[in-house]
Each structure stands twice: as C-alpha cells, then as structure tokens.
Image (cartoon, rainbow, N blue to C red):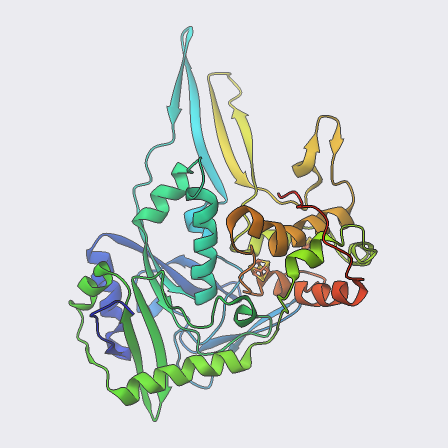
Length: 384
Ligand code: SF4
Ligand code: SF4
C-alpha cells in the first residue's frame, strides 16, 4: 500500500463509477470479458462487460467456463490472453518506405495515441509485466513501441480470491497477493450477503481516481475479510514448483534423455509461448505492394518452437523438438535469470492449461530432477 494512503471500501454497484472516472481521464479500458467460451482481455465500455458470475476450471490441456453460485466479477483466474497483447502487440508495423518518382521516403510508425487502463491485472501478471519491462526497457536498446504503451498505462490490479488448477505463483514468489506495481488494487469480497471491493492505492494517480469515487475508509474487520479472500487463493494453488537449485539443475542436464521423452509428446505448436505473459520472441516481415511503390516492415510474435526461429545460414541450430523444448524451459527457469535477474516464469500456469497435449513444466521439472545425477553445473548457458 502507498504510504499515507488508506484502504477504502467501494460497494459493488459503484464499481462502474471507477470505470467512468478512468474514461473521463482519457483511458481506453481493457479488461476481462467472456468471448468464445473463454475469459479474454478486450476493450471494455462499462462494468457490465465484466464476466459477472463466471468462473473457469483449468487443468493440463483443459479450460472450461462454468457458472458460479454467486455474482463475482473477478471470480476466475487467468485466461488465454496476457496483457502483453496490449503492451507488445502480436503484429506491429515498424515503418513504411514509399517511392515518389526516383526518391524513397521512410516513414516510421506513428505514435500510439491511446492510453490503456488495464483492468483486473493479477499478481503474477504484474510480475510478468515487470519481466517484460526488464526485456524491453532495461537494457541498452529500449523498445519504443513497448515504451509508449507501457508509460501511458494505468494498472488496476485485482487480488486473487481463488487459484486455478494450473497456478503456481506461490512457488515462484509472484503471488497470489499483489504488493506493488499497480495504481489501484481491488479485492472483491462476497461475505455475509454483502458484495464490495477493498480499494488499495498504489500511486498518486490512483489516489486521484479514488478521490472521485463514493468510497469510505475500510474497518479493520473489512480489511481482515479481504485478507482472508487472498489466503484462500494461496491455499488452493493447483501446482507447486521446487525452485531450489533450479538454474544448476537445467544447466547440468543439457544432454539428459528426458528431453527425448518430452519430444515424444510435444507437437512443437508454440501455444505455450503465445499464451505466456513473459515470452517476447519476435520476427520481422518485409511486405511490398504489387506495384513496387511501398514496402512495410512488420514485427510479429514468433516462438522458439518454430524451426525458422533458430535458422542460421543454412540450417536450424535447434532442429529437433527435444532441443526446442529444452531451450524453452531452460531459458524460462535458468538462463533468463542470468540475463534479466529473475526467472522468465511467473507461475501463471497458462502454458500448462493451453498445451494441447497437457505438457506441464512443473511435472517436467520434477521428472528431470528424478533423473538428475547432481553432477557439477555446466558453464553458463546461452539464451533465446
Ligand atoms: S512459462 Fe508457463 S507458467 Fe511460466 S509464466 Fe510462462 S505461461 Fe506462465
Ligand atoms: S509444450 Fe505443448 S504447447 Fe508447447 S509446443 Fe509442445 S505441444 Fe505445443
């Protein structure tokens, strides 16, 4: 919580006023909504667009929406979309080149005009945004597309009141409680016939928005009730991952036969990388018009599971699925820490739920440990 700020209570029927206040400040709202039998992130216009009364059931390779017994607005866990689709878009024009007579003019992509208010960001997703900040903003080369979108964004976090079957944020130290990285954090409480939100301020902008809302200071009992909701999520966590010695485990097992076993099941489809909130691999396409008057460079998401991604002068350096899976999980759980100071996995569980054959990185790590002979760690490995 921000120093000097208070915890406030916003009644359920006043939630829409929060969205109105953000729209009046010029934000485009994006948040969870039901579409095609999943809870996805999309543009929202009012609180009515939230998935009131819906929940999700997730297991390895399985996702199903179900009706809840109550009318909760945020009574589900993370779905197939991550916030990266708004901050690091799947397809992005970088520049155009246009011919005019004998001259060629280069036109960079225009500034991104919208400012997003991200509604319902979970603790693991705040950690994922922080990981992508390190990738896109933290080094020598800053990504201007990401920076524009990220700097303008207003973050409304939601504390998890339940955990999904594939979640393991508690193991990764990224949740279920969001402690920082937001402008406002909501905890939804349905207890004793009441339905309300505890509102926590995380920034000056958040405090300014709260000042426009019909809130009142929370009582100690209300703060305790909100705390109980998050404790329930921690107790329900569907998966665990033993992170002890994880980096060394992967670095000394490049040649383990386990990778061939995973490759017998892995389709190399790349679904795990598309849904992952931290994966950032991309490629560029140059697209020309048929008249030869204009060309455009477009960046689009790519995946370390595609054979083209590791194609270098005459061949792929990771031609087998075993090598590609090993690369993906080793980068996530070991070499990402060497590059960016924290693992590339925040324990959201999406790659487990959305893998069509239910490959589970927590299970694969356990299986690798069982085959590990504990030899000394290999020298520091490469990354994506
Ligand atoms: S590797 Fe899997 S569990 Fe970890 S952040 Fe990515 S999608 Fe989530
Ligand atoms: S682990 Fe699953 S989602 Fe990832 S590439 Fe293999 S089959 Fe596809």
